[in-house]
Amino acid sequence: MGLYNIWVTEKCNLKCTYCYENNKSAVSMSDETVRDMISFISERYDASDYNMINFHGGEPMIAFGRIIDIIDTLSGKGLVFHYSLTTNALLLDEEKLKMLSARDVYISVSIDGDKYAHDMCRKKKDGTGSYDEVISKLPLIKQYFPRFRIRMTIAAALSDRLYDSVMSVSQAGADVIVAVPDLYDPEWTYEKIDALKYQLLELDQELNSEGTVFVFYKKPDICNPQVCAGGIEEINISVNGELYPCSFVTGNRKYIIGDVRSGISGDLLRKFSVFYGRTNPVCEGCGREKICTSSRCKFINAEFTGDFLTPSPILCGFENMMDSLERMKLNIMA
Ligand code: SF4
Ligand code: SF4
Image (cartoon, rainbow, N blue to C red; front, side):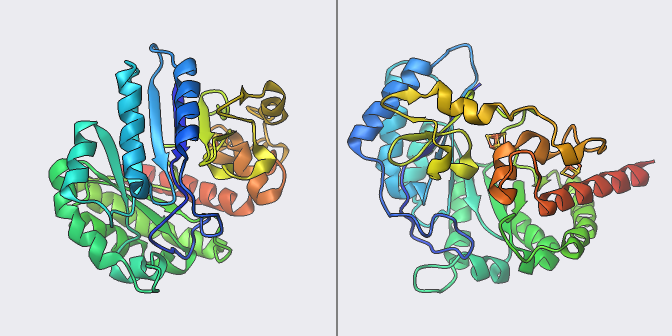
């Protein structure tokens, strides 16, 4: 697999309460960086791989022209990629949707639930909520992307509204919903995490019968293999062309592994790849170790605990809740 996450811009037209991009400088990728990045990607291209490019931001639609140029340049060179992007939808219009659809770009729209939940987190620069504007775009989006995806971020303070939030976006026309808890939120407690289980059970029963795809917690779009491939099969390219092994640490120069001009430094990558596939000492003997995010995602461990081989207690709490939920589902089916 060849997966590239490209930060085309750090600019955004929203100021979400949980956004890690808020403190970054508001710049977009320069012409020169785009040119060097295309050479870098082209040199690594292997037609026998599954090749994917995911456009990140900021709000990627602010750099819409850039995105189209990158896709058209790569396809002009005969390179075949699957494309995706996640957008807050505010800048989407029919013309842009037509252009994205013609290039087969898979669209995810960020909506955090019903109006109350969404407006509490996803605010415009003037402090007002963005829900009404986003929701008004969904019929047009659905016209061009019938299976578009909703990407929900779940804040701890809104965890008791998970069921209502998911049902609300489902009723707004989404058939694919991915809800991911904000792991950086310091308000998560084991009680709050455990309380999600009953809402998730209800959602499972409700949405399955409607044929909606609903995924909670695990991000199916990041990395599925159980051993991290950061810097090997997955490359994250920051707005200034620096290379990072994981989307969670992109822009944090502690984790830099090269840049689009000089390529990946084997020495820098080895500092991190030595941890890939290793068992976390505290996880030895845990029944969930084979599928737990902390076993695979050493950068997430490092970000939360400062140690590549020590999982965050909150992440462990989510894994245990999911384990208990899966057992409850099996009991219901038995
Ligand atoms: S559930 Fe907790 S103890 Fe088990 S593997 Fe995951 S982080 Fe480690
Ligand atoms: S740490 Fe996890 S999310 Fe990051 S690159 Fe590795 S597998 Fe992907």
